[in-house]
Length: 544
Picture (spheres, rainbow, N blue to C red):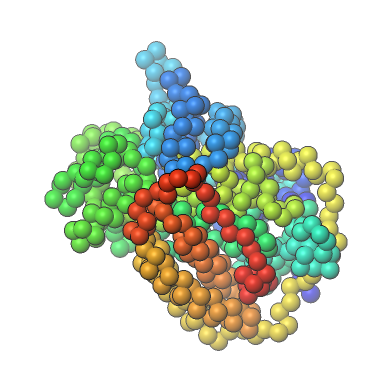
């Protein structure tokens, strides 16, 4: 018999959004948090830059809103942008009250105020940070708080397989409700059932669908794929942000070089020392990420080079070590001294701007299912995320979802028994090599055909390849017991298909989606979101 757990709230994901929500709900409900690895392993922990918020008297809400709208290339929801930006200061106060030690600097009068960076797309210094390890400071602070709370139960090394919904059970009604999730226990190699009154997807993005990514290994699009299979609409998956500057070294595993370096004057150079960004945008190194990444990609292809170079050596060594101590030490480990030389950098898949469609409370198309953070398409980022808006989104939407769920706790009851996990018709696999080969093939053709610069021909090639892979993986999934690698591969091929579908539908270049066949934005009508609606035919092959 499948082991079953029961909680008021099930949160799938343990980054800034998931842990922020868990901490706020725990005083009102019993909460389960699932983490695919150890609790802190996720994109939040590795975030370097900071959190954007209007904290300087020279800055304004309207300025932050306009910067975000401009960077989002016409597809941001202005109401959501203003909602998030207006809650910036209180979000920072909440994190500070928890104990996040943001960097401070002395003013002329000797008082200590927050030190604020300026990053690409921003017209003001508004990036509050904890040196160059802001994500680590936030994540570890949240971890300490949730581990100490008696009403939060943590389940590490658990990978969600699928959502359990009423339309796939004996409780089917005209309203599709989320009842819980099937979850793989990696330590016991078994499947468990988690029942809950409310389920929240906080699973992050899809970076591992690409060969080169700044994301940790767990970012395999699980939440987006599960939501799609369950019946949620997915929007704007063509907008994958490639971070312009990841350290280029065979052992670095795409170590991120924070955009904050460019905010402090770092320049991008060709191999001969020539700067080039001024030829692509008047903001040069401080242009939004899509422009910088395409410029680097263009120069690498034009010259046949493997990388470009990032140079901040004109700043003093003391300045570099004071502001970027972790990046400085990490580069030293790979033989590069930021104070003496330019370091080689390349773009890598970094952030998913599309995802599960939600409202400002985090509600999805399925009753009792919420989603927050990078897994979502909230309307904040549009066609291109502005630097450091993502951690702000996590905290703001966690609080908004908390308020909505808290108000509904007294009126939503626990569902009756849910179907057990059935593996009576499957066996242990003797062909694990199929999984690893398909994984490698998928990530390589996504990088080659659905990368920074696209063509219709490349997209159709990718579509043909992903269709074949889906059939192979569907057959494999139907015949063998699940493993962690198989679960992730199943989700990766689903999100790859969603990215390709979305990219083929957009007959223009906008934000992060750039097509050589349609190099200009479409004129004559307002910009449109790309919304994919699940159908029975699309879902049935990969249903639980």
